Image 1 (cartoon, rainbow, N blue to C red):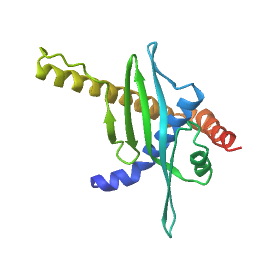
Image 2 (image 1 turned 90 degrees about the vertical axis):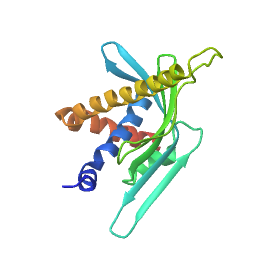
Image 3 (image 1 turned 120 degrees about the horizontal axis):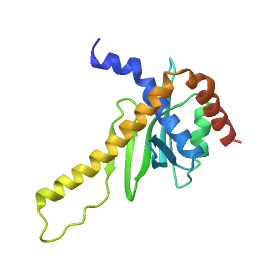
Image 4 (image 1 turned 45 degrees about the horizontal axis):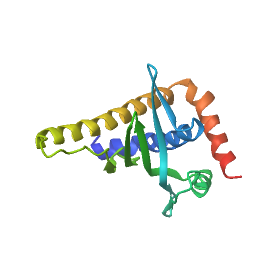
Length: 175
């Protein structure tokens, strides 16, 4: 099986991950528990792309705006459209990151890390490594969140607790 076939076979996980992230961030006031008394704040940041596929065509809906509820996007979820891309804002301690996350490959796009303060006497290599460290911090955090999601997704908890709560959240928001 080549890489493309593997992606097509498992791409539902990325879509499930994005909608689960949206649900968790909305129902927990943006707080995601990473365990070991460690939390981060994560928000969907105004732009969500959803897609449905049928035998006839692919339908894509992109919702953007400053309304964090994104009612039209939630309505699209009730129409069996899946989240394929989302703009996300992540707070880790005092650091704020902004990026888009793609569901097929879980690629980061438009990545914006916190500014590194530059002093005229600073070593340019040091600035580069500090910026790289900040980016790594956000990527590692998202890896941890994805790991938490996968553990839930393959457990009995997914069907017994998470999926019903997710469906209730989607339907509650469109009324």
